[in-house]
Image (cartoon, rainbow, N blue to C red; front, side):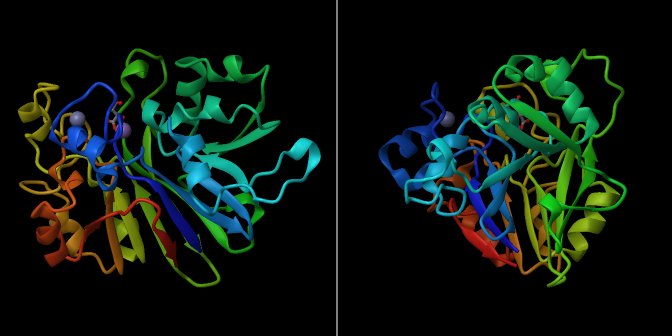
Length: 305
Ligand code: MLT
Ligand code: MN
Ligand code: ZN
């Protein structure tokens, strides 16, 4: 299985358009600090890639990564050609779904998501009605009760692992029964026996998530905030990291120690908020994590599993 990291930032990105915090200001001056919105691409078959979460940066993410970018030779009907075979959604948050309208030039767009996420996008954002004149949204269910083949692949299987019932803010009042609002994606390669867990929003270290992580060869996990008080201290909210639906990296309930205990060969943090001190490539937190065998996911990294 081949996976490429397309972006590693939380909503807003680094830099965020209306922010001059330390991380955002430094990212304007130093390109190495920049992070696009969190997303990965998974190769289902030779030249067929599925993008996990459709971020506001999706078109630039496709263009700047070797894998899902069209073959540089001109050709094909009306010149249209893409290795992007579909989108998989782990939740219905805006930073993971605003890229869907950017893909409207496709005649049809396969999207795998839970029924809860689909209902939020259809009833909260009216995405089906808005996009119907442009493209066919071809929905498939991302099931929790057993894996399904990815894109007809004979070796890659995907399934959802329930993480939490945290709703996007726009969906707070929607009459959708509480369900699979936020899931982790579990991808298994049956030919190699290797597996990946992608969990960009971890509100709760659920038993299901814990079990999936315990057998994975590579885990890419929510690293939004360094510590629980970071969002309050930064002044943009009165909520803690945990109250915002993101377990912090360090401190009580922190995820770093939990990741350190996993057998996975690769343990990566993604979805970093621009207030997270780890956006500074020289911050001492990187050494703290390295001692635990954990790292922040580099933009563009290709992982062979
Ligand atoms: C989150 O990750 O918690 C959401 O993307 C935040 C938001 O944009 O409301
Ligand atoms: Mn987010
Ligand atoms: Zn900022």
